Image (tube, rainbow, N blue to C red; front, top):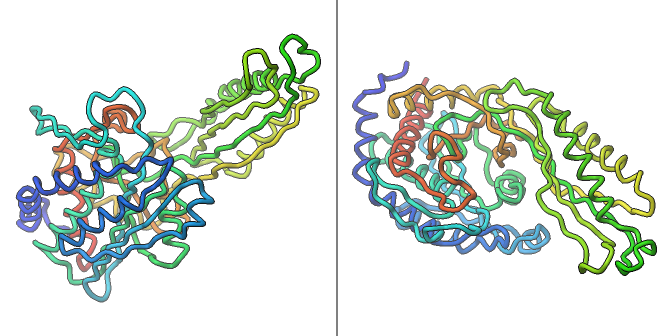
Length: 420
């Protein structure tokens, strides 16, 4: 039977978090101040800094460096994943909490130092600015201090908690959680992964990324008939791809928070000079897949669309390379064990109902789901992910949301490790 949400144990957890909150904020600042731009993906230094902080708190941490050859073949520079494992007794589940430290580069337009961790006071308790302050170095802090509060106030007598701090979400997660799972370094029963909004997220989109290369024949612009214009072929292809979005809008998802599939061309490279007919154009496209779609059928459909478009372009040679195939996250039996305490304590702490939802993002949480591990996404963030400027200039996190998320997670962990 669940304790009432105002039980002294929960209030004591809240009080511990309040008393140590300035320290939690300083920890997040220290994490933001070590860059983890991916690319280039030199992330081992951040893992080392995180390990130093954990060790200083009395939390033993195991370092798991991914072999350099594997990292470099992936297009990155260094990855060390971290696991903190706390075992409390026989019986009970092993609950893992995963957050990723790698982030997209800051880009332009910042009015605050993207690596400063600056706190700007306001009426709500302040905003902490910096790349990954919201997604997802914030949940390094959330999960560390939720664990510390639990051990200080109501140390469990059964089960285990693991913290997984990984560094490959931006490139798909195969060398982050995927690598830890493949190496047999962890096998939790339940997983909570870094959040970005008040909702408990139980499903997310999948993603297919392709690199499409169109080979024509370059020629002098004064003699265009002697060449084969790869850019003209790319123009035909782009028109076909964007027209396909009209078809995709008609495929509706039944998951709240997810609407329909869509396709985006995010990068184009081609040509050599203004007076040269382009002999080569490279497109990189992103096709988001709703949970109801079959990934094999989606890839076949996109490839067929590309091939049909280029077939009408004489002299063009086509190459298609898959860059990423990320499956969607679907709720697995047992995920309700996570949802129930997070919703119950979320409502108590935030003073409003906390819904479940899906998200059009894709995350490396799917890699745990692929191993049959029930998972949800929950952690520090604003009401909606867009409010934080995640992956945009001036990314920030309301400190009030950090404190509240830490309380909710600590309370939920207490419930998950109690005898049933």
